[in-house]
Amino acid sequence: MTTRNSERFLVAFNRIEKALEKMTGSSTYVSFFKLIDYAKRKNAIIRRFEDDLREYGDLRNAIVHHRTAVEYAIAEPHDEVVEKIERIDRTLTEPPVAGEQFRRRVHIFGPDDSLADALRMAEKKKDFQIPVYDRGDFRGLISPSGLMEYLAETVEDDVISREITTLSDILLHIRTGRSYEFISADLSIYAAEEMFSETVVKGRRLDALLITESGRRDETLLGIITPWDLMKIE
Image (cartoon, rainbow, N blue to C red):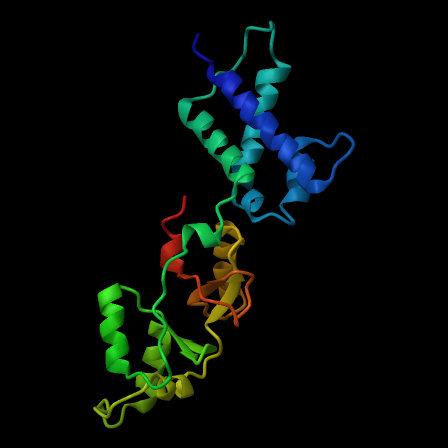
């Protein structure tokens, strides 16, 4: 027997409602819409899907409150709606985190490495974020915007110096402030996405998030996230 869309919708909706109650610590009845208000203060996934969840709250009311019989639902949600609410349910149950989605082997550079060698490696790896470490100590990140800042500061008479440039030379010329943040591997990708947008509002450019196990800079680098990477996320 085929399960109706309304039944699938209600199963996913009820699971989400239970998740919101657990998230907010609610022990007495609170309306679904109030649960969203409380939960979004602490959860980036709820903030991301807030509009969808509010629409689903109205649809649930239409299905449940206007039933004329157990087997009859006044509204049968479209396939896309059911698939979307089930996807949100799965996302809340098992949130996608930075350490799973973006964990990869990152090439580490030293301060005495030449810019030419770093750029050749960046081109080979198709990864233009250049993390610089000195005997395991993080020195800085050279992003494309940082490299442009270096070139703008060092060009003379419309000529770019052909002297061998090291990565430590470039780090000395990056003065626009830190363009990166360290994050823990268990941070949700939706919270990571918000970090980029929040820094823009504050007038700061954030080029990359550096992933370590617990978000400390003295830990092994597990991966790097850029705004471009997050554009691939639904």
